[in-house]
Length: 271
Image (cartoon, rainbow, N blue to C red; front, side):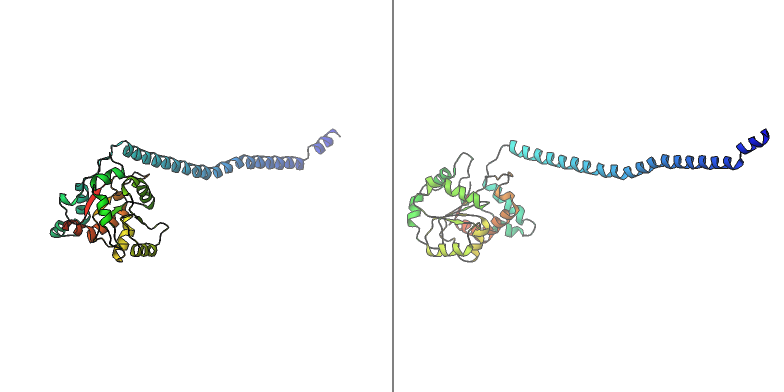
């Protein structure tokens, strides 16, 4: 009877069931252990993605620092006043590759074509008084329409307005016309030049060149042409450092002004 009871307690089917449950547990343990490995693999691309913006930020910071260094150098460097040789060199460099030696010689101006250059000690009014001591007489004798006695070229409309305000001590009773494109249509300027009498024109090379090409502005009565050569904008650029202004100024000089200077009717000044 004892043997029979022990055989019933240790049934082989029970042993197989225990083995199966143990196998299932090990399988689940293995699955649970394998999950963290999958999560680590998913984190890898996110880590690579996060490293890219940091590199971009470093490059932009370096670029900004470089720009600041360049501006610092320009600010610390002592400004040098423009001289007639600077304009001559500019014309030679601009036309040197496309013109013959004879054509370049025709663009050269003698020292007698230039007024005394600004040595950076003058205001605009004091400079005009120095180069044009007989302004009152020239102003009274000027009676031609569509023309001005003095033409002032600068880089922008805002700079033109600044120069007009700063010449109050010089201009006296003369009339000044604004020759730039901002807020003023070219047809309005053409009508003003045709109907009115003006002594000084202040504006940008592009608008002045357009008026000359359309015969709205005549330069036969012009005696002085002043270039706002030394002034610098917020980016520390002079008018000849701006590509568009430089090209338009050189075109105007080549087509209209240089011939008048060589003939002795127009004097050039660098303010």
